[in-house]
Structures are given as C-alpha cells and as structure tokens.
Length: 309
View 1 (tube, rainbow, N blue to C red):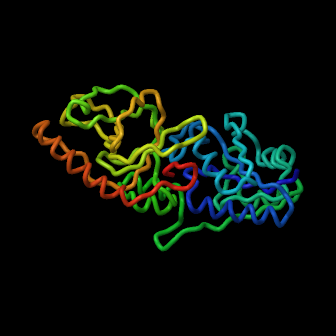
View 2: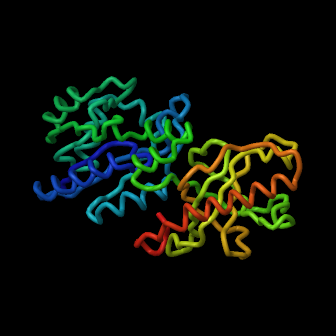
View 3: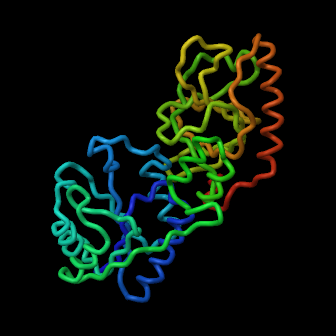
C-alpha cells in the first residue's frame, strides 16, 4: 500500500522525534496511506569510515520506543553498506518510489542523500515529482534552550547534565548490559553489585547515580528494583584503568548472572573519587545509597508492562 515515508536515524527517539512521528501518523491518516519510518543500520558514519556519534538507543530499544508512538507505524531498517552509500540521488528516489511505494516523503531540513551526500531537500522535491511522490521538510521542535536533538542529548550526557538529557528524551537515559561476574568485592563489604557487560549506549561521566532497573524477559522489560549506579575505574580498589558499570539494587538479593538489565539514570549524586581507605569508601557508599533512595523513592513504575521506562 502507498505510504508516507519518514526518513531519519531517530537515535534516542526523543521528544522531537515523537512530535514528528505523531504528526506523520495524523498526516498519513488524512492521506489514506500507511506510515513508514525508514532508518539505517549500521550508522552510515561507521560504514563511511567516520566516527559514529555515541549511541543513545540500541536497535531493539529504538523499535520498542517507536512502536509505543502508534501501532500504525511500520519501522523499516535498511542495511547501510558501501553499495547503498554509492546510490545516486536518482537511484535513492527510485528506491523510495518502487520499494516503499512512497506518496509523501518527510525529512529533516538538513537531510542529504545519495553518493557523496549530493542530494539536498530541493533535489528530493525535484526527483519526487518525477517518481510520483511529494516531499516536505519537518520543523525542528525545541524549547528556549534550543532544538530537541540527539546531539543535544549526547552533549548533556557527556557533561553530566542528566536533567537536560531527561528533558529532551522525555524519559531517563538508559544503559543496558548483561550481568557478569566481577571481583565480588562488593559482597564482602555489604554492597553486592551487578556488573554490566556490553553496554553500548553513551556512558554518563564517571560517578555515582540514582537509578531504576528493569530486567529483560521473553515478554519484555519488567521493573526489577531501584538502586545506585557506579560508572568508572574504581580507583580506590582497582589497579587497572578498565571502566566498570555496576549497579547496587536496593532490597533485592537474586542470582542475576546472565540476565540483561536496563538501568535508567535518574540523577547524578557525585563524581568518582579516590578514598584513603576501604573503610572511608564504605562510609561514603552508605551516604550514596541513602541519597539515591531519597531520589528514587519519589518515583513510581510506568504503566507500560510494569517497566520503569
């Protein structure tokens, strides 16, 4: 069936993305066509030899968040490789018309396409006429601090500005990984932690954070616990410079090895620090846990399947 096709990366599926897609659904309803989101994997920068921006959402999380906006949206993830990158603007538009049956194409006003980014919005409009679709560029949504963009979220995360990242995303930034065995020092000092392996999302600056945690199951995310997150090198206890992502779960003692957890970063409590002794570290950890409890106890699980976010 003919479709309104929205093209973009949609990393983070932030408030600007959601506003754009909600409007696209209404527009598609008015036109009597399907609504399709066309995105690419892996990130084009990676394929083209450039450094890709820090990731905000994995592909499965992106699918989940876009699916929440409307069941009308079909998400199409096209594999971006060198052959795809070599398409001319004309070939790209032919693909939109034939493969996606595009009747309207919606893009950001800085959209570029085709080999060497040769095509711009004006070229898209021109080629659309030849291939039977119309094109429009979407306004940039934002606030007094600027556009709601993935770049703004990444900048906020890198600066430790968790409040602005949460504001633009419309939810806390999330880290996900598999629970693996660590040194198990935490258990001996009264703070057993889950060590997360394979975290792909943009890391927050080294420090301690108040968090909520979901556990992934076959049917989706389930709220597991509230807790405190540590990101850093553990300079007081570890001699190596490896970055560790560890979460202490409040009021929960379960064997979670091999499980995938989602950690939602609510608030930064302090930067990473080096302590003169293990005793001094433990004393600070008690303070951190009490502060984290005070933050997360104000929260309640969201309505979607019992998960926190």
